[in-house]
Length: 146
Image (cartoon, rainbow, N blue to C red; front, side):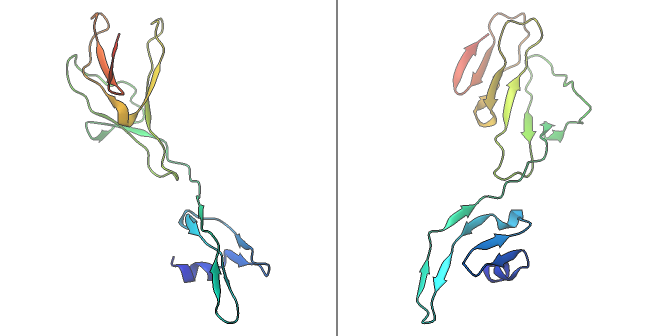
């Protein structure tokens, strides 16, 4: 919708005192808004613009494994030791855009805390068996020994 159409839309009610009421706010209303005052001699003053952020919930995230969508009912991903695996977390929509993070959930009885890392900072070096004494993960450009 362009600027002139927007103010004449039935959802926008201009009050005599200069107030604007937007009924049924939509995602397309997101953006900078500015009040303008003009007198009969065409002298115009503008208020400082404000940014209207229309909040929109993102769709639930899903996983891509080697660029293929993982079936929602599948909770196991078999992978061979020392192989490479490309996992992607995808969430569509949302305003503002969601931050995607990975959480490593450890097996019961393992004496370590779960780690949360953002998608941008996480790079798994290799996948090793729990019995191997030295296993490295590159998280936030630092090595963590297990």
